[in-house]
Length: 582
Image (cartoon, rainbow, N blue to C red; front, side, top):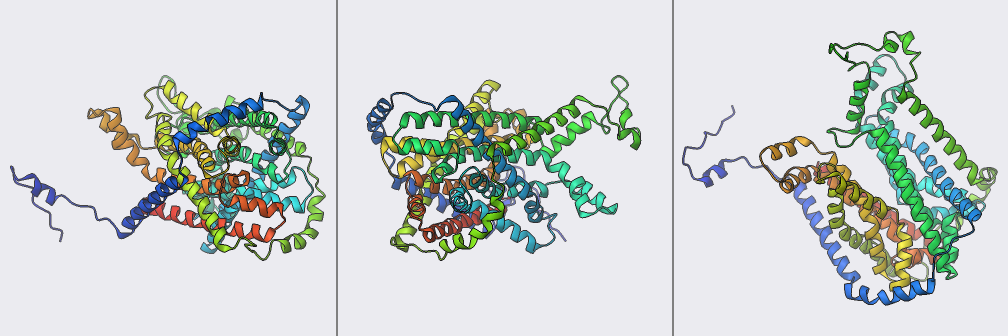
């Protein structure tokens, strides 16, 4: 029998009323998660202090910047025909590599999703494969493929493709787990096969989200393709590396400007495509809900007579035979044209890369000889203590950069959210700022900072923090726009100010997503910090570059294993946090 507490007497002290109020029990796991967050924050503060970023020293180094730009004189570009060839080659290998990752990610995501996997063993294996490919630096993959294939675009395509499988398959699997199970179960009840369940019940629901994920990854791969030039992958990155190594800073900065413009244009095009497929993000509900609502408004379920208000069925859907002869509406024409344009771009990208297809037949004989060079792992003359210290320095760089990123990303990302920004002008300005920041590849910024301030972790931290603002700010804006609008309207109706609505309704609902995004940025920064070490940004990347240039591939393997363990640890903590704060 349940005993109900009697209501407090009139005039009872407030303290007694508070004592009678029900209290939510905090689980030990939630307390442990909170303490872990505090510990990570403390380590980030200590890492930032260790970097010793000094504003006076940065201002003092401005004289170095003036001398550097005076020595550069002006920006130079390669000849027009050569520049266009480099641009098309870079875009081609990035698009082909991303498409390769997207194709491979489909079966991986199918096995990794809880509602489609054949068993827990398959799911665990698929998840581990995704984390493993995500942890492998694309520079290391390119290094291996350069040894196995002839020079050109193919090593870059394979490096980008394999490295991208981890993130794309993860996002694909998350989208599959969020589908409406009704259509899939209906196909199963009708006797459909597993393939029919997927193509008819799963794929139509997840396709918009998948396209958005692939476009987002393509943007990241375009920025990351620059560093692949340092290990011999053809394209703009290779020419830029030649220019900076030969101290031709005018040409190097000119190519960097071209890369920046390409990144911004690609980001704008991707945003337009995502907006066309996903619709407005300001409405309440998930993307699937919004797509279904739009479909119902234009389809059979919500077809309403314009004057009488009575529902009617379009002529093309009156019978199955009529449905097979659907009219060519504006939306159908747009979708067909978009599909053919996408197919033409894929064919053009593969053609531009000029792939030597015979390499896929001959490279098998090279695998044993190459594998022997990478095993067993060794720390060489440096020793385990020094290498572990370098790995700790890389993690410290990532932690410090993530900490510096949080406040600016939260501010700019909030103003970029439709339900937070005071007006459309401020929101547009914030979105444009995030696009501009994301357009600057971290390695280019790191190179310029290293030339001005010298080698060390300070340049790496600043470059990572600047680049992460664009990524985390966009994720913050998208998360805040997707919160339930009910609490916001309730506080507004009660007379709350815009700041009170933001602090009392918007941010609390988005806290879980913000924690997940912060760990994602930390994960990204750990891998990026490794890459920045290649150009002198500090950390384990310096030793990775020396090992690759000295053909000490056993040390490369040891470094990759350390990176893998670190990324797996961060991934495990992030998954635990998302589970606890769900």
